[in-house]
Structure formats: C-alpha cells, structure tokens
Amino acid sequence: MLLGMDDNRRSEYDMTMSRNESPRFQVDPMMVSAYVVTAAVSLLGVAIFVGGQHPYRWLGLALLALFDLMVLMPERVVGPLIRRAPHVYTAIAAALVVALVMLPPMTPWFVVLFFVISPTVMMVFPRQTGYAWVGVFSALTVVMFLFYSQGDLLGNLLQSGLYVAGYFFFAAFATQTARANDAQRESERLLAELQDAHARLQEYALQAERLAVAEERNRMAREMHDTVGHRLTAAAVQLQAVERLAESDPWRAAAMAANAREQVRAALADLRATVATLRAAPEEDMALGSALSRLAADFSNATGMTSHVRLPEPMPELPSAYRHTFYRAAQEALTNAQKHGHASMVSIAVDQEGDAWVLRVVDNGCGLRDGGAQGFGLLGLRERAQLLGGVVELAGIPEGGSELTVSLPVKGMA
Image (cartoon, rainbow, N blue to C red; front, side):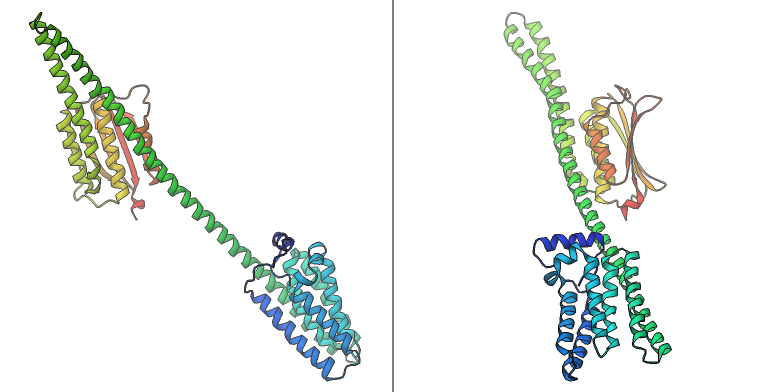
C-alpha cells in the first residue's frame, strides 16, 4: 500500500523498488488501520460469496483477492504501474470497489474499501489532487447508493453521505499524519546536522589547540635561538679571543672576558624567563588567583620586571576553560611586554564587568609597533576566546604602553 509518500517520498520509494528491495517496514497507524479494514471486509466478503452461495462467488472472490493484493502488496503485484502511472493504479483500485458493489445482487457496504483508498491518495498525490480523487470516490458512492435505493431514495442518500464524510475524515487524518511524519523527519535531519556540526566544532577546537601548542613551541624555539643562542655565541667568540690575547694583551683579554661574562649573565636571565614561561603550564590547574600571582612573581624574578596583580574578593571559581584562557592571555601579555615592549612594569587585573569576566594586562612599554601587527600568540588567544563566546582586544594607551583585554561571557559559565 502506498502510504506516507508525497512526491519526494515517492522518488525514494522508486529508488528502493529499482534496487528490487522492499521499503523498510515501519509501524504506521494508518497502515495498521488499512490492514484491519481490508482484512475485515475481506472476511465478510468471503462469507458472503462462499457461505451464501453467491451466484458470482468465484468472480467476487477473484475481485476481492485482486484488491487485497493491490492494496497490501503493491510493490510485488503492480510495482511498475505504481511508479509510472499512479492515477491508473488508483483508478483500477476504485473500479474493483465499484465492481464488488455492483456485482449482482448488489452489496453496497463494499464501499467501505474506499476508506482504505482515501488516505492512500492523500499521501501519494499533492493535496488538491488527492482531494479530487476523494471527490470521485464520493460521487461513485452516491451514484451507487441511489442506484440501490429500492424506493428509499432519501434514506440511501443520507447513508451515502455518512460514507462520504468518512472518506474526507480519513483523508484529512492522513494529511495530518503525513505532516507529522515530515516534521519528525525534518527534526531528525536537523538533529543529525547539529550533531555533525558539534563534532566538527570539537575537531576544530582540537586542531586549534594543537596548532596553538605547535606555535608556542616554535615561538619558544625562536626566542631561545634569538636571545640565549645569540648571547652564548657572542660569549663563545669573545672567549676564543681572550684565549688568543691572554699572553700578548692581558688588559684587552680581561675586558673581553668581562664582556663575555655579561653576555652569559644576560643569556642566563633570558633562559630563566623562558623557563618561567615553560614552568607555568602546571599552574593552570590551580585557582586562577593563585596561578596568576605565581606567574607574575616567577616572571618578575626572571626578568626584573615589576608586576602587580589585582583580583576581586572573593575570587569566584571560574570554569577550567576560562582559567585556561585567562592564564594563557596573561602569559602571552607578559612575554610580549618584556620582549617587544621593553616594559619595566606590568599590571594584571580580573574583574566582572556587566555580563562578562574581563582580564586586563597593562604595561608601560613602548606601545604597539608595526601598526599593531598580531602574531600567532594573539591569534591563538582570539580563537580560544571565540570558542567561549568572548573577544580579545589589544590596543595602545595614550601615556605609553599597551593594554590586552580578554572578555568572556558570564552566561558561558552555566
């Protein structure tokens, strides 16, 4: 039976039929009702044709069997006809009902089979076409009952009206069922798309995290090469010169040795700053206030930069993703203030401003250079914040220096 198929669904049905496969069985109330009605009418028809010694019992049984096959197993009996000419299929089914009614002596209650066909046409054809077919069934019913009136014209007309009302009721019910099924399928499709988008977002977050880690490693490698490596190379060259001049020019050799010592001290300071940054990662699992305080203290000890940390009292327990983002932002700001800004003082503050938690890092360095060009560190911070619904801003300040602001929404903490 062609239940639950509009134009799109019929195309899916056609594809299934072309592969010689049966459509996946689903429990459908309309389908169950059609089977029950067809089975009940078939049993009564068999009783009439066989038990009552009907004069056309074999023809009646054949017509009834053909209708049952067309309705209950259409894909096996008349599959090509359904796909290529659904109107012809419907006309044949209606003709079988008319033949069963008109087979002498007339049996008008066979019009009950139109209850089965009416919902079918509403789910096979567009709505207007479906109702047109229901109208045809109604007209056939009225004509057959008038033909069977046997003097009671008004009574048979009223009786036919009850059947007609039933056709339209089942047709409307089938339409609503089809709409509900379509809505459910659309909801399932949207849910699948949402789950797929969520999975892609998670994968993107992991890729961004891996990229941030790789960029951090590359940045640390470049910094070690540009600072510690450069200073140690210069010290090595000067020590070679000291070795050559130790006997011929001891005063010059002593001066170069002093320069080499200063280069080694500077390299050691750079190394300590780098180690402080590398050691900072475990602090992210601590409370944010303690982690920021230790980060600032370690950085000050390594670089000689003065740092201040201001936190709200009491400091709330922020989600791990928030602590991670704020911590990385402070770490990046401290490194940039020392390396690029040549700052001597930096302040770190955390506050709740409206519907957002805000981290501000302000330094007294030389401000933004190259028009405020942004490196991979700041790009990674922006990606972290965007995943949490927040924003990152970097700007110069009038009195000199720069300010890094990270805002994360309070609602994201729920």
